[in-house]
Structures are given as C-alpha cells and as structure tokens.
Length: 378
Image (spheres, rainbow, N blue to C red):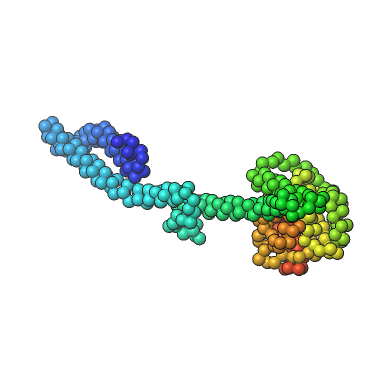
C-alpha cells in the first residue's frame, strides 16, 4: 500500500489533503472539548441567575449542546473529505499530467527524438507563467540545446570523416601507384606523400586543440600584456610569409595603449590564426592592415585585408568548425577549417567578443576581437 502511494503523485496529493484535514479536525476537536465545559458553565451561570434551573436540566442541556457540536464537527469533516477528494482530483490532473508528459518526452529524447516540446499554458510574452510553465519552458530550452548539440555532433562526424578522407585517399593513391610501378620512386613522389601525411597530422592536432579549447580543458594564465608587444610578436613570426606573398603590411598600434588582461600564448594563437587567415585569402600584392584601439574599457584588435571577401550569407557561419566560404580554394591551401573556431572559443574564454565584417565577395574582410583592459586599483 505504501509502495503504491509513494509511486503515484496523485495519491500523494490526496493523502496530503487528508492528513491536513485530519490534523485540523483533531486540533479543532481538542480545542472544542476543552472549551465546551467552560463556555457552557458561563452560559448556564447567567441563565441560572435569571431562571433558577435544576442540575438535571443543566446536564440535559450540556449533553444536547455537546452532541450538537460533535454532529457539526462530523458533518464538517465529511464535507472536508469530499472537498479534498474533488480538489486532489482536479489539482492532481493539473500537476501530474504535465509531469507524465515530460517523463514521456524525456524517454523519447533519450532515444534520440528531439522534435517534441511541452505545451506552455501561460502567457510567455506577458511573463505570466506559474512554476509548472517555467519548468516546461526550461525543459524545452534544454531540449533545444540537446537537439543543436546532436546536430553539431553529426555534422562534426561528417566533417571530420570528409576532411580525413581526402589526405588518406591521396596517400593510398600514391602508395598504390608506387606498388604497381606507375609512379616513379623519385624524391618528388615521396615529398607529395609526406605533404599529405603532414596535412593529416595538422588536422588531427587542430582537432585535438579544438576539443581542449571548447571543453575548457586548459588553464588561462592571465597577465598584464601590452597590445603593441602582442602585435609585434605575431608580425615578426609571420614576416617571411608577408615577403613571400608580396603583401603590403600596414600597422596602426599605439605603444601607449593600456595593457590587456590575457594569456599571452593564447592571444598570440588568436592573432596568428586571424592574420594567417588574412594572408591565406589575400592575393599577391594585396594589403593587410592590423590595428588596435581603446574603446571604453576594451582594446579592439582588427585585421583588415583586401582579399576575396565574405558574402552576407556566410558571415553568421564563418566561426563554425570546418566552415569555408571557398571550399576548393581552402582545401588546396591546406587549411583545416577550424582556426577561426579556435580563435572564437579562446576570445570568449577571455570574456571578449569576436566578429567578422565584409562588404561582399571580392571586397576584402575585417576580423575584430576585444579584450578587457587591466584595471588598476587605487
């Protein structure tokens, strides 16, 4: 019996109503039994003074008075129990049915079905939601996030499979050609095989780095760093690439800018990814402009290029993993397609913002991100 009640919320609600009523009746009965004699004596004392009644008459009156009170309490108890049954029936339906619905949907979600949502009876726009509606809203939001995560997981598996297939197919093709004697065993052939293996290794390393960054499995060593020194370090590292592609570099970073609070190695990684991306998509003879400026309590870093540009349709998706605006061009250049995703995650970990702007294809693009400045305590 107790097991049955514990496993059914409706019976728990009904039992709670009954317990409240029983306790109320017990308290009322005890109080009544204690107060009846004193109240009756006071009432009869006044009556006796006026009418001079006998003791037998007083006893009869007391018995009748007590029986009337008990009868009233009994009627009130029966009425309260009936009301408890009806109230628990209607209220339990309002409470139990949504919970049962949620339980059924949660089982379907566990089986991989994410399309169904709980119905919200309150007015969401007017913020007129009770606790059950708020629970349903939170449940729906959780389901939305789970659905998006599942879509991203499937897309990631497909993207990784596609990215790994290309270098593996190339390596297999070269090896088959060498085995069959179709390809000559020259240094050029082995260099091509090595190039594809190196590309495969870079992709695996980038995937490993992305998983660590997105999972937050690293410790940021936040220090006070000069924006000028950050930019200078990256430019010195990439100077040879600027010379090889004959790209004009323009730098506008004031030495007097306030320091930023950041992990130097991670910020160098972000700048390297963004500037490297600009170098990759800017044709020979183009121009890249690197700037940093103080806006309120943030330093805004910007990398503007005269490259292939980004269409308005691609801009919202540019930081998605493996997303490329020009897939054939990016694949030939050897990019993994997740450098911007890593940069996005690292900037967010620094409580900053990152965004991309472009006037369209062929009109260049600008990648910007912000970092908080160091606040000196008085």
